[in-house]
Length: 95
Image (cartoon, rainbow, N blue to C red; front, top):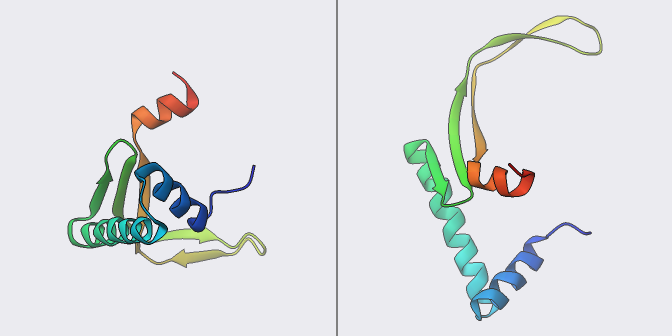
């Protein structure tokens, strides 16, 4: 089964909402913009019923170069993670 591409997703949204692809693309762009703005401003954004985008800070740590085994310093950084909602996990993986 092929992956769902952005084009295919837009087609599905247009079909399900009985609109055209242009409206579906606008909707997807607006939701994406809102999500990014909220994560940047508040550190998180919840997709109701799906999950949550969360901004987290990682501490600096010591890692290993897998090729040489040499210890290296990994700098602190901020990352964005997606936490899947419990209801989604239960429905996909079974209880």
